[in-house]
Length: 139
Image 1 (cartoon, one colour):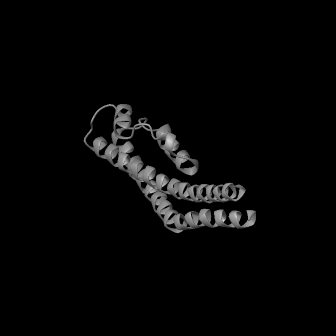
Image 2 (cartoon, rainbow, N blue to C red):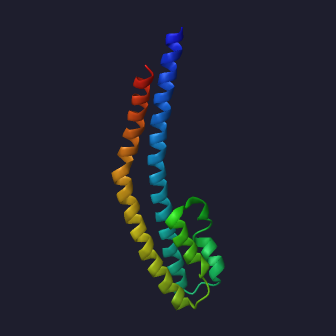
Image 3 (tube, helix red, strand yellow):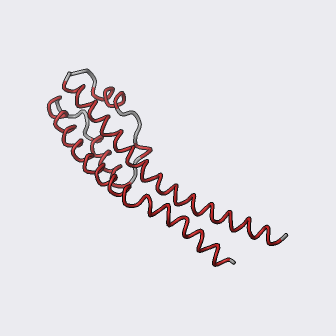
């Protein structure tokens, strides 16, 4: 009976450690998707500014919504920098600012894609192998 509990415990450890590796790989993909969504929103803002479509603050909420919840670190600081002074300039200035921030977010997206491609398999395998190592250690 104790052998059965030991096997179930080891299996649980293996499953949990593998799940942690998969969740870490998923967080990399989520960061990439969030950056792509912000870039799409910036394109929408840029095009609507080009067409001179009204209030800039309302335009910002229509095109992007609330994205502060999904960003962290350098991405969040770059986004807050954009939001801090959005709407203070004229339409032409805001159009050029959107273009420059689109370029900055494209760089962030390429870095996130590179990190995702390099690290997703690493996190998945590392989670599984750590689980196997812990199971072997506890045997």
